[in-house]
Amino acid sequence: MNAGLTSKCGIAILALAVFASGCSYKVDKGGDAKATLLQGQTLSFSVIRDVIIAPKCFQCHLGSGGQGGLDLSTYTSLVANRMFVAGDPANSDIFIQVNSGQMPFGQAKLSAIEIQAIHDWIEQGALEN
Image 1 (tube, rainbow, N blue to C red):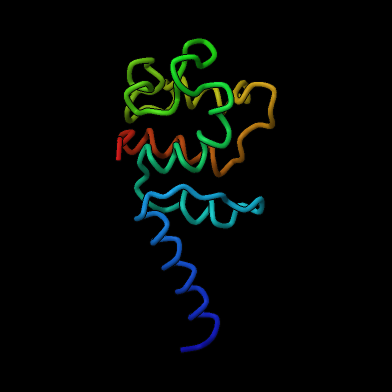
Image 2 (image 1 turned 135 degrees about the vertical axis):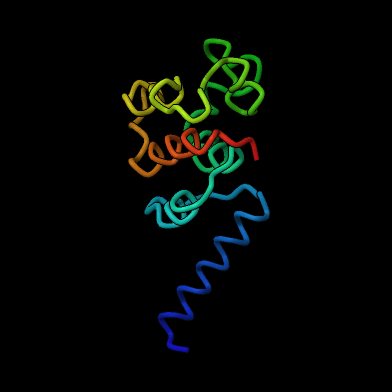
């Protein structure tokens, strides 16, 4: 096996292991690991929460004291607050807010990969896990 193929296989196995374990992790600023986890797969809330929502939204929307009374830490809270319409990103508040750049408020707009992942998650049915 050549070195390039071995390296790519190793990265894929590592990404799969991190995804399967459900553990929290910090993604590098370059976004390569984030892109690997967010593209080309069926997404779940836990992936969206851990990779996008936790680092970008929890400072304002965590727990019962979240701004606007919005807690984005649980799937149940997103459902209760009608943040998405499964299968319909265009009519889902969470997608509309991040796609327009209105959220995260006072911060840089989410990356195209992050926005697309939220779109794809909702379009795929907004799976819980």
